[in-house]
Amino acid sequence: MLRRLLNLLLLMCVLVPGLAQAMQLSASRLWPSPEYTRLALEAAQPIAFRHFTLDNPARVVIDLEGVRSGPALDALAAQLSPEDPYVAAVRVGVNRPGVMRIVLDLKTAANPTVFVLPPHGQYGHRLVVDVRPLQQAAPAAPPAAVAQPAVAEPSRPAVPQYARLVTVAIDAGHGGEDPGAIGANGSREKDITLAIAKRLKQKIDAQQNMRAVLIRDGDYFVPLAERVVKARALQADLFLSVHADAFVKPHARGSSVFALSENGATSAAARWLAKRENEADLVGGINIDVKDPFLKRTLIDLSQTATINDSLKLGRAVLKQIGGVNTLHKPHVEQAGFAVLKAPDIPSILIETAFISNPEEEKRLNDPAYQDSLVDAIVSGVRQYFEANPQTAPARLTRYP
Image (cartoon, rainbow, N blue to C red; front, top):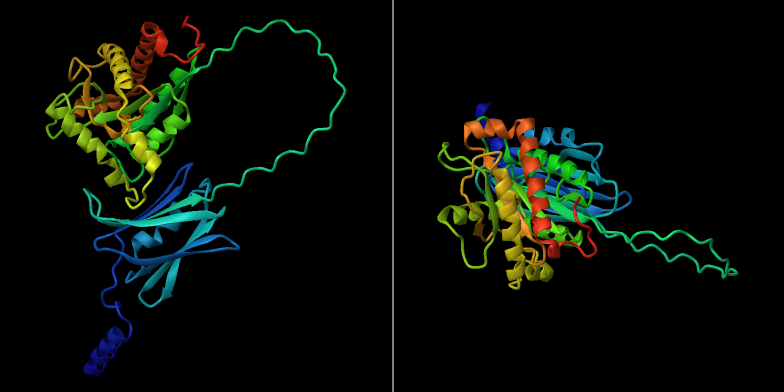
């Protein structure tokens, strides 16, 4: 009897390839954002898959070959938020022996991008599905207006010339798949930077001649190049990237400000930090097969000398103010090849608010009072920069009161 059962099992393994080797996923994550929704599936081994789309209704189908059900797949549907802008429902089930099927029911027609990422840091092999909406067709032109007899308008008092607001792009470092540095007590850099960025936006919006825009306003990943492109699309006048530093030794402490360098880093530490921050794309996950010449021109534009000089002036003003709130790690603005600072026409700085790897500073970073003091210092530095360099302000910008 036992021999017959063994023979039957052997026959099933032959007839159903991959059945004996079927694996479970180690993790599944769903990240909604204004631009796209990301599905990330992780396993200890590469994931074999195929995908396709269906219409009426719009769906994305992902077949996972050699994968069996498990906690990671079972938990996937529960991760969907009703506020997700692009995915209406997630369905998971067995399509055929040895193949699990994931169906994403969409709220709008979409163009999914599917790619794989090799193991990196804390992550294993990942299969990533980015659901981006199809570009909306341009609205039809309104019908031509019927000519009407001219009617004289009543005279109005003269209105003072309008001064354009200074637009400050605030970039909360990391996000989504990329948690950033992890503190000794488990704090995640991506959470702290977003909290500080939101407070900074409130304080900047309260200024008479300034407005702020968040590059990311939730827990999702934005590739480094897209952060630069978004800031330029907003016609930002300044770019502030907020981070919380980490080092291998827990006693490292203090705040820092960095600007871009075209000629190498100003210190070994700055070079190390830039390398680590620039690896965010490897952690958060981008499709390296996509070649966008516009992004390449944006990030490798070498006519940035004037912008870098303005960035250094901005950095000095902000660093001076931060020095009244926290110990400075270095008394001067450092420079390195940070990818996120490479907008050729926007003064840009990266602010390392404190060392999250230092238990004392990690505690301060989670303190709302410290966050407020830090934000006040940054805003004061920005104001001082424009007061000392009015020629860099937008055209027709009035002086600060």
